[in-house]
Length: 150
Image (tube, rainbow, N blue to C red):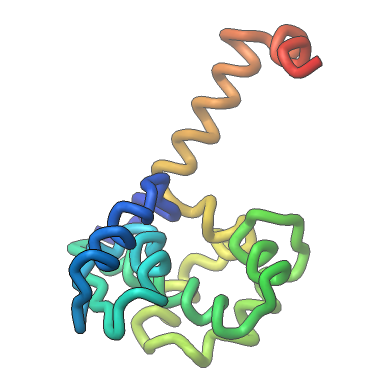
């Protein structure tokens, strides 16, 4: 496995947060995926171990962690692709020293994903983007879609 399948997870971290509120733990183990669950638990668990069968998912989480630690919120949102940003590769250069050797090597081979915004790097996100274009342009039609929002 070398592709990122999920760059972000659309699950509600409140479930895990609620469980930890009722059953405090010294350590939590969670599936890595896009990292969203682990990040949602940071203020609830003293230690979090992230595991995933796909090393690319771990490299993604490592990069997100480095970005969270390095950038202000607006910069971070731009870096991951949730806001406009023209300097993602320069931002990556500024934080790549925080990554493990394996994660840095992975992202060195996938700089196009960084340039696009890492929240768009997953196979699932690429499918959603393709499907939404198809749905909007072919099935519904642009005029009809815009009419829905008036």
